[in-house]
Image (cartoon, rainbow, N blue to C red):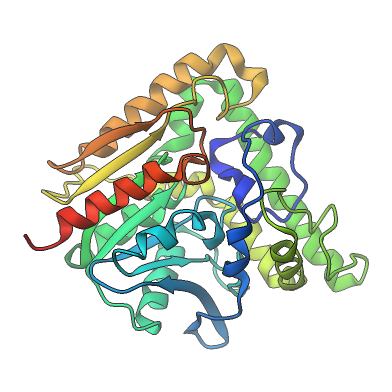
Length: 345
């Protein structure tokens, strides 16, 4: 899959092999700043025996909360969060099974479950609202759900090249070949991760160091961080949580759909990738569908901006899907503009 949904997983933790298609999507150098996100701090208990990692910097209000896309982790924000933290409190977190967070052997990784983990992690870490929610790609799912559930704590929103409600249904209508490729990718990742978990338990998969097929990471992640993540991924429960997130991706796009969603005057900015029409979001095999897919992608971002009367859309010219790594200043400026708007005048 080329897919937009893997966030790149260029920047992200993606425990498995990189598909040939995905390798050509993004061109991002090694981000050494990601090493700070594997320091063993910020682990908080969200239920008995299970911890979520939340990496917080800076001080001030509102607190900015960064959520990565599918396959992503807190390190995805390494070029953005420290700059925002010069102005206000900023926290990036890891879903169950990603980054430094523990796996979750009990719960399917639905948007309801992951958003609940986020809310519990913030509370356990002593972080109090108001919050500005920043979600990249499929991180829009938790962002939408959190604001719906905790509107009184939400001070603003930034969507970074977000996926959207009804995502796969919309994609299938605009580009059936692209949708088929994405669905095949989700299925293959789910199977690979579960097979790796079973292999660890059976002793047939060697653990402890980055290596294909179960512990291969994208080149944007520095060697030290890859090594730390590989050690954590030796836990089968982590790989199964990752598998569940891929499996739940399409259902999550339906779960976050809500008629009549209206956020009033909530400060809101949608940052869209500017280099998406070249096919960086979808399979090269569906190139004849790219124009229609991109038009639908653009339309959905305009719709998300209309959730607030203060909503606006900005285009990160020259950036692909990984806007926060390719054009971090665009994201920094959007977040700080929302923080400013959210503060009492």
